Image (cartoon, rainbow, N blue to C red; front, side):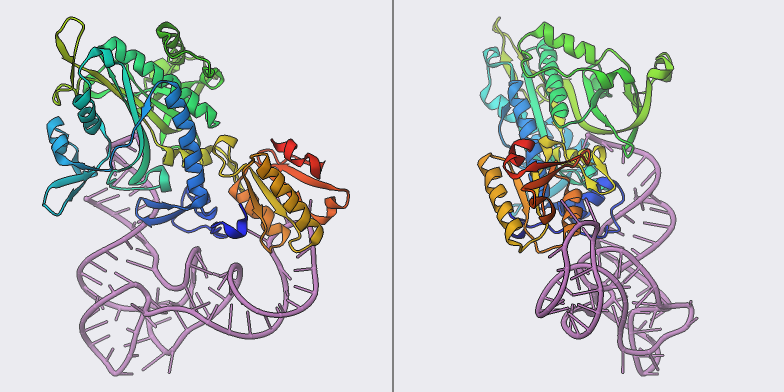
Length: 439
RNA sequence: CGGAGUGUAGCGCAGUCUGGUAGCGCAUCUGCUUUGGGAGCAGAUGGUCGCAGGCUCAAAUCCUGCCACUCCGACCA
């Protein structure tokens, strides 16, 4: 992509409404534009990050056996009356009327709709287990949206819904998602710690919030430091081995970890002092088993092997990709700007022509740009007529993992300079070796 | 929803107290010179001062009402 053909409205000054670093940097880097309180347009650079995150989420959801579909944003109130939540949900639900004066709503979540889809088709235990997910925009009319996309009213959510014959089956479905989440966050370069969450009226131990530690986090969290060194299940982990999957979950829930709402000071004090971590955290995922809460009132029942029928056991599993963009920045930035992990980076490399209009640098850049494209490397070529300093500042701000700098100084020896954004480390390499150096 | 603020050019701000024909920096445009960490000089463009009403010879400035946005708190993915 040529920068002169891209749409990248960089801001030199920080808009005053942006308080936390991720919000500031997203506005400055031209990723995001606020349209109303808690409502944002995703500009091209931001959209690329969002889609990179979605890709990782999809790959891990699919790997665990979940199946993608897509449900509408606008829902009929009737389904919500069936579950009883139309009246229970409160003002956070954005309620709308259509031209026929029918009650509609902009979905804040999709339990009712997915249960309706399930009950329409699935009648037999033989079709279980089933896990369906989608990635769709949600709206919750927050009293006080803040922190940019960290807590917006409109937000993107991956929500998965599992259906099983009984609680044991549902536990395995839960465990599979648990592992998929560990892998998803790890691939995005985040250390996410599963913390026991409130299960509400259902009870039990099957609800976890996945929290990343960041100084600007929204809530206080407490955990055992050993979690930070735990290994994440590799891509060959079999999701069908019930015992093995349970072992992994058991290990990842063996040590103390809790948000302030669930905090048990006595249990925390029992941890050796040098192993205690008390920090701020950002919730990036939430998984939940809720049994027959929706299947029973909405009559989502299947026939069992013995001929009797019973409501299915369900769970739901959320990740907020739009919030993850902000969380990634909170966890990866410096004074100059964002530092993207490769899996989420909008482009892999910035190609900087330090003397636009100079035949030698123009030629070398064109050659490199084509070589990168041929190698399948996503590159953003800064071909603006700007001075070197402006290009360095832009590249650091938008935080692509690599920068290839092409200027008369090194080109004299037939070399270009490659900079790793995360470390600042620079190396001089012959032009012909540049693509291989970052691949 | 309680409390506190802010709305003046694309962005950041001054001007409001004490009413008198709207200003600064950056950005943008033109020209020349520059070219390895946000260049210099010269010139230029751009604003119904959030909206509506009122007081006044005269309102960004005073009064009344409304709207939008932000921050703290309670609440939430």
